[in-house]
Length: 193
Image 1 (cartoon, rainbow, N blue to C red):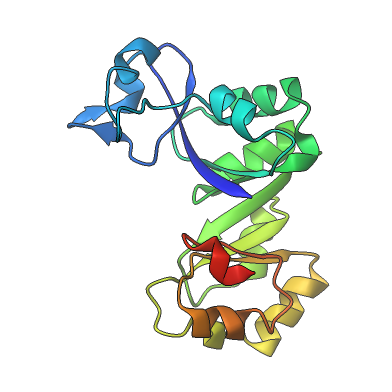
Image 2 (image 1 turned 180 degrees about the vertical axis):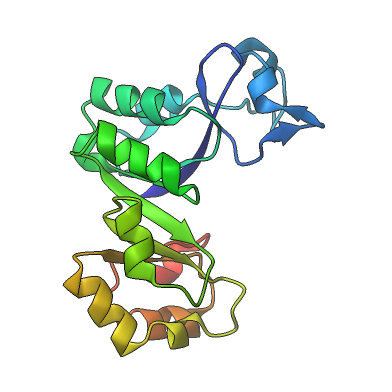
C-alpha cells in the first residue's frame, strides 16, 4: 500500500499533501489552480487524489489518511466512483472522521491512528467504529515492547487489525513481525521484504 495524506482545496478538490499549510497559507484557502502553481520538488505539482488513483489503481492499494476538514464524504465518493472499496484503508487521528467514514461507508476498512501508549486501545478504536488500530510509536526506542501479549489478544478478540507506523529500524521490524501484525508502515519498504 501507499499512504497518502488528504486535504480539501478551497474549491472542493481532494489534494495529496502532508501539511495543512504551504508558505503560511492554509491549503483549504487555496484553489486547486493555486495549489498547482507550487513546485513540490523537481518541478512536480501537488497531485489530486484522483491523479494518485490513476497512478496506482490495479498496481497497489492506498492507505488514505484524512487530515483536512470535511474530507470524509468526498473521499468516500471518489473511492466508490473508482470502484476501489476493497483497495483502500481510510484512517485518521481524528476519531470523528473515522466514525463518520464508517457510518457513511460501512463497506470501507477504517483505521484509528494514535500515538498514545497507555489508553484502552480497544475501546478507543471501537468508539470510532474502526476496523484497525494504528499505533504511531515511531519515537519510542522499542515499539515492539509495547505490543504485549495482553494488547495483541485484546485486539484480536475485538476483531481489530493492528498496524504500526512507521518503522525503519531493521531490528524493530524483525521484532514487530513476530506478532500478528496486519501491516508495518515504512519509508523504506524494501526492509519489509
